[in-house]
Image 1 (tube, rainbow, N blue to C red):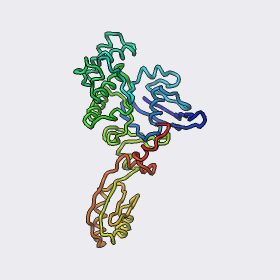
Image 2 (image 1 turned 60 degrees about the horizontal axis):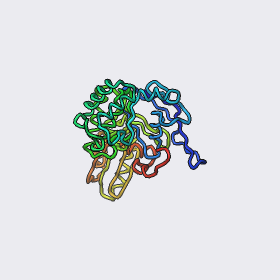
Image 3 (image 1 turned 60 degrees about the vertical axis):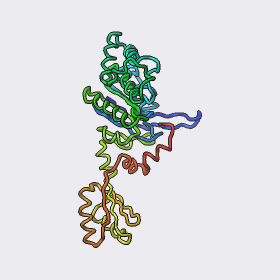
Image 4 (image 1 turned 30 degrees about the vertical axis):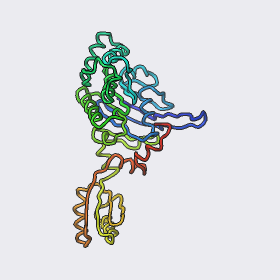
Length: 324
């Protein structure tokens, strides 16, 4: 559904300086996948999304989306994709059903077909009770469902969602995700989305792509990335005088990628905490090191970003940049 090679976008800042917002991105997305595209502000993810949806012409490289070239046949791409941006797409003063009918007409449906399709997507997104209301009277979660409905009127093969749940309360976010997952399950729609909520990408997406400074730095399942790039965390509390000894034992027994001593606390990063911790505790006991506390924690996608870049996504959000 998406095949991009060397995708690049440069911007001129104040008519002189050139900023390379996206730098040679290679990307493949198969039909039916749900892909989360992550990165801090300025990383280039929104610029990538705009190029893939024909809203911004690439400076260099190629991209074929839904079987059409984004540069040579942008109209063909637009006819086959749905795009839901960060801002609401419906006007505030027209009725919800009328907005959907107008969207269908814009995509070439007859008036009768547009009405039928409007009713279908109202049912799909559970918006029937709101059909005669104006978008301005809807809640934030209902308006986002309407935005998704607008993107689905023409039955696209591929749906792009740019921050679909940003600004919503937890219940509305969960509701939106429920609809996204049902859409994919029932209709096999390929979904490519950006999100700032790492826990959403972790639990919902079958594939995670991370971009930073205009380049893709990680691509895989959430579990695979966490296991390969971050590792589990093990925290053991001992007497202050035994901490250095506990760290030395950890180096021998646990094969950690990282050991940090903080007073009487020893923190390790290991491949599999569940198999490492029992043996580590046994050796500590045999060596006469008294353990006061021990716990393990699975890594997060933020840990993956930290392992790759030396900073967290939260820290990076404050940096900003041209290629947001």
